[in-house]
Image (cartoon, rainbow, N blue to C red; front, side, top):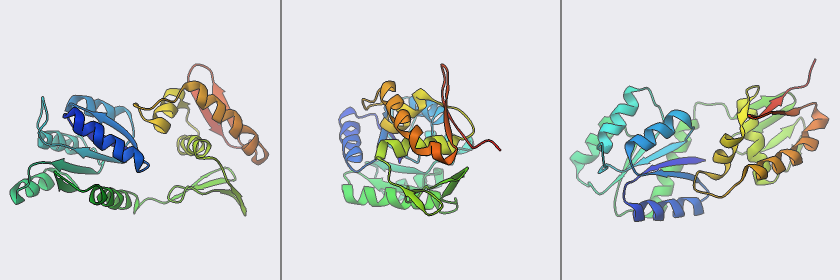
Length: 223
């Protein structure tokens, strides 16, 4: 799962990012609303964690603007503003949850899990491309009665290709989706994962097509 953190305090952002990555999340951290806005417009996130005291634009204004633009991304406010009125104002602005600093990591992680459950509650978890299926909740990959026990990175690449199919997934988008913008994962590593996946899905009639200069496309069996 991919999180967006909007926090202008560098030390707080770094510490929060490290803890969330340690908990298994991919995290992209931004210091200004304009940077976060641009990222939301071009990338996909599962939950946003937003501070209120921000440069350029207050966090409340940012949240209202996101909602006015039709952005449905779950937003959790994480702030030092701790009065009841602050909480009510934040929720009324469009946030889904409100947590004050200092906070306990276990509580933050629990609130993130709850937000993710709500986000995916009305979305079917089963994705199908040709004879291949993946459960987006359990991340189990299977075809009929056969289950594919794939390494984590290979499964993440396959899941991204299946979600986009039949559209092309840019190589840079795969890198960002798997590693986050702050982690070290090269385009060459993506090529390695693709090469390992191909022989595993070829017997199903599926093909990972290399679209020169752009990325990859998962194609169903031709009839």
